[in-house]
Image (tube, rainbow, N blue to C red; front, side, top):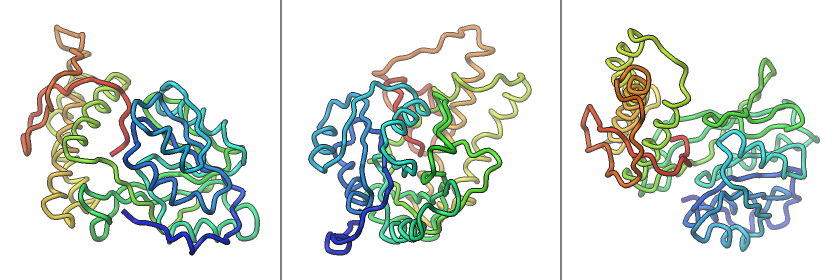
Length: 299
C-alpha cells in the first residue's frame, strides 16, 4: 500500500473539509485510509456499522470521531454520515480506499482560493489486486463523485446504490486517483459479489421474460468484455483475467436470481449463510450464491 511521509504534511494548514468513512470489520485496513487524509483535512468521521473486530479502536486511535450506527443501507448510511460532518465540503472514502499523494495535492489546489470552483468533483478509483501495492498499468476502473458540497448535492437515498446525485449540475473531474484495495482475496471478492448481486436482484426493476432470457445469454460475455477490455484488466495478466471472469459470472448470477424470483415455481429465495463459495475458478454457470450480511463494497 502507499504511505504518506509525515514530514511532508506536518506543517500543512488543514483544509476546511470533512472526510467521512463508513465501516464494518475493517480493522486490518482502515488505518491506511485514515492516514492518507488525517494530516490535511480538518476532521475524519468514521460511521461504524457495529463492527465485531477492532475497527472502532483503530479509528479512535488514529484520532477520528467515531459514531456507531446500525446498517441502514448503502445510500442512507452515507447520508447519515454526511449529517455528522462539521463542514459543508466533504470527501467520502470507503475503508479500503487510499488517497494518493498526487490526489491530495490536487484536492488542496482546488481549495487554494476558498471553495472549489465546481459543486462536486469525481475521483478515479483504481483497483489494486490482492498482493499488489499499486494498480495494474493503464488502470481504468471507476469514476465516482466523492468530493462535494453537501449543501447542494447529497448521496442518493437508496438501499442498493451509493451514488451522489448531481442532476444537471456541472461536475469537475480530478485526474489523480485514489487506490482501491477492494478485496483481500479472490474468495473475499466472490463473497462480496454474491451478497451484492443477491441484493441487487431483489431490488431490480421487473423485466419481461424475453428480456431476462436475452440477458441470461448475453450478461456474461458483455460484462467480461467490459471488465477485461474496456476497463483494461487485460493489462493485469492472469489476475486481471480472473477478476474479469468472476465479475462477469456474478452478474449472470444476478439475472438468474431475477428470473427465479419472478418466473420460477419456487419464488422464495434460499438464504443460507453457510453455503460454500458459488464460483469455482473459470466456471461459466455458478451456483446460487450465499446470502449473509449485506455489507458489500462495489468491486
